[in-house]
Image 1: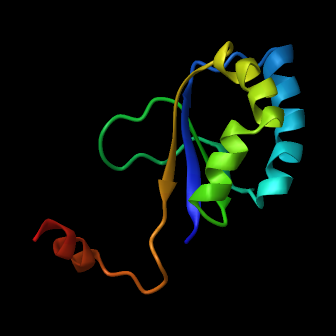
Image 2: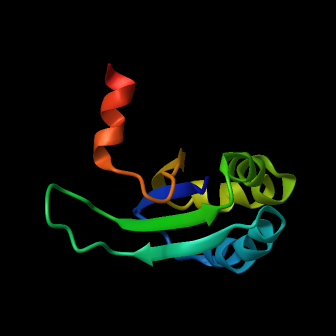
Length: 109
């Protein structure tokens, strides 16, 4: 099942370190099958506050997403982002093809 790395970025300093991070991150995704779905987009907010930008990266599964985040290549460049932005980053499983919202009820009962 597809898994996602999602980041809500705020207060990004577009200095040399972030530029280096941006020019290096693509290579860290390749071994894990990661690909950008959204990168630095400012959402059109229709409910609630959302200061900042959104990044979404898809991976084949949660194992690949965790592997990428823990990889030496990504860990090496991670401080370039964390020193130059405020962010919340998470890994989350997607849902299978054909999923219906009511399926969550089975987990509750």
